Length: 209
Image (tube, rainbow, N blue to C red; front, side):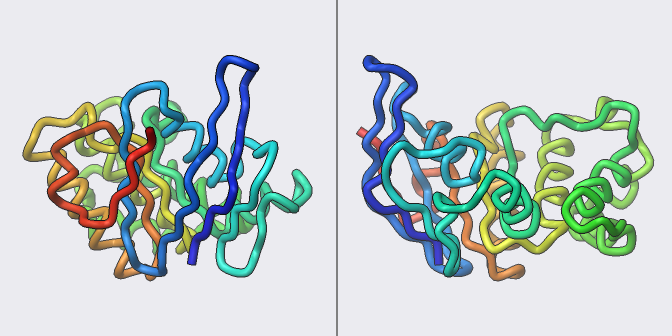
């Protein structure tokens, strides 16, 4: 289970965010919506351990990640959190398969090549695995990002605007894939978005005011 309690973050005195308490069960999807400037990406970065809260607690399983040292937080993130960010940040010189394998090597020191191939096959990317990321469509790149996020079988899958740059067909495909795979891998899924197309797909929602 993922639980957020009394979370507060400030960039400066004019940009402060008090986030509502929330929780997301194993295999459950939580959609976090809100207009621009309401802190959706900031919240995702806090939950993912990319930012540190000034106040509050973030529990992932039994771990309060707010209390972890930087080194332990980096290790915990690699082992327990999968990130699907707005910008994929692929290594341009590596093909699709090697980009996914790299995520396993960075987290564990081992290259999970067979698992990466299975994930790419499951995401209908088997024929794309030896291509360079730049040669893929936006929808294909998003699916590679999902494979990379799942390679270490995380407890939590975080997706930041995963459908905003996709057409309707691909947006719904990606949303369905995220929900399906989170259940399959028993991961909590949290999606932050302003994409109104997703509001009818997920009943568990929080709107940031």
